[in-house]
Amino acid sequence: MPEIYLDTSALIKLYVAEPRSTEVEQLVAEADGIVINRLGMLEWHCAMARRLRTRQITADYMNLARTEFTRHLAEDYYRIVPYNDPLLGDALRVLDSTDPIPLRTLDAIHLTAVRNAGLARIATADDVMRRAAHQLQLEVAYFGD
Image 1 (tube, rainbow, N blue to C red):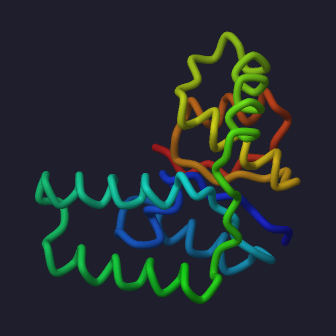
Image 2 (cartoon, rainbow, N blue to C red; image 1 turned 90 degrees about the vertical axis):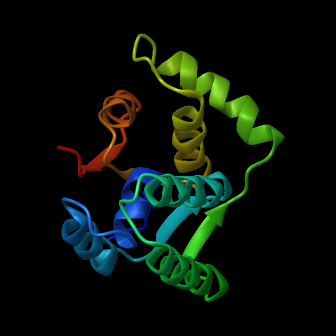
């Protein structure tokens, strides 16, 4: 199966047991490669910190997950799309292409990263992202409720 881009809502499921985490793990196991955006790395840490603040995870769990995520990054488990000015310019075109879907800033950046990486597939648990990706004619692996 070709490479697939994971937005943060799907990426987090690899490190926190949530509904449909097992399905994301299976998708990752079958893919030829996993692609994320550098922005997704920051979003991952923010999402984990939010889970810690809301007591969905413990500090020990957070430390273990961070260690694992850092190891995956160091071992090139993910291909990382750079976050740069050209990507931001391209994101405006993606935003225009998905109107009237209420795309958020970071979602536009993720979708632009998918396109800039030359990919046709994205995994997400976010319904707005799913709808926008379909409008862009991307194949979507959806792991939402």
